[in-house]
Length: 540
Ligand code: NAP
Image 1 (cartoon, rainbow, N blue to C red):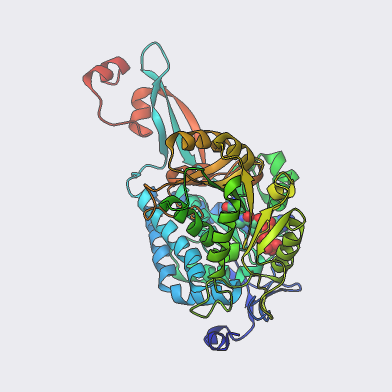
Image 2: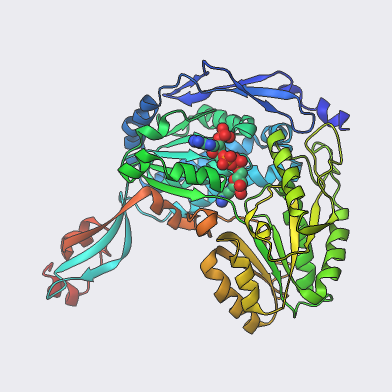
């Protein structure tokens, strides 16, 4: 399999040692390196290790060199840095796609999803920054009169925190995951220390090399740790923050870190999620809404081999339509060609590591105890390589806890029957304990409103598909810079992106109280005053 595609990887033919970028230099570890693999061939292709790095010095470098340099710039100037970074990465797009295929098992489409996601998020934040003005703060709301007259008023402002942002990222989006966090932190004026997931760190390392070589960012604004973060978290303090993306289990461990708890260091957790898709009874088999439902589920299950935090895991279908939906989805998934991601016809590549491969196969086995396998299953379709087939199951025991609790992180989803009532669908979806996104396919506005009201408290995002948006909507698995990403409960309880909302995590909201004239003049209240307010405030 894949002879032609393998030959194309000339530049990656030697085993690469991945270093860390700390204190302005590339540093190799002094311990035993961890090997990274090509998941298509299982060959080792790189190794990384961070042993010996002085993490106290790394944190200090960010705080004393990177932070002041960033804060000396205005928001639009920092936005320009993001724009230049986006361009520098886009220039190397073809090479990054090649690396993502080799280290991540990504098809060209999957690699573009990650890499273009990164560059477009940087560009979006550069755009959000353009009208923010030259001042060193952002205002939050209008001045609020607090005294007998507006002369004594209050104004909420956001100011950059003076610490460092540590970003611990998941393996599945080595480019986008890192850059979407960086965009918000750097625009807020906070330096970053990035740690990628190790199994796909070759991609993140290439991105880091491009960032460092571009010399766009001020010294100390960007550091990159390839391997373990050692005792890094023990050096964080009250002005620092940790943003983590990964499994719920690791998130729980990091959130409980005694030093972070003691110092009240800000922590944002983006964890896993049993995302649901819900088919309403009125979306009949002939409707465009049903066509959208089938197409999105097939895409969502197989894009990035189902290794997306937003991928659908539970498909809620009115009980009398389970068999028909099962047959239609099996037909859709049967058209997905699984194989070498370097080959043009391939629609789905392998899982990105042996550990993931073993976890997914074991997870399918556990789901199969309470659900029937409609297609796919735990048997690998190819060898060598960490391949699984798109796997659809139909619940035999829809109330079994495992269906609502275990995220099988691959191209795997289960159909569950429900009565067709919107409130029941919302209740079943909420058994996931809190999700990143839920998608609803419905045309009846009353049914849809009822579903949305039940779903919204449990989900960071509710995606509504209908015939009015068919052909125009982006799929539910796509995270957009202008909309918040995150979810309550099991999904981590965090929130990222959402336009300028994404900056708030890196800034301090402070309530200023004082003379309105001073607040308006120095802290961003509108400059133009009417004669009436000038007299009332005494600033005339
Ligand atoms: P993971 O095993 O939890 O690892 C996530 C990151 O944490 C990696 O960089 C990992 O480093 C690091 N890590 C693990 N243990 C650590 C510790 N004790 N101290 C400090 N860092 C530690 O998750 P993953 O397998 O990479 O990612 C898959 C999971 O992420 C899935 O469950 C998926 O749903 C979730 N995810 C969520 C989102 C979201 O936005 N909510 C996005 C993407 C993925 P090493 O790789 O070196 O172990």
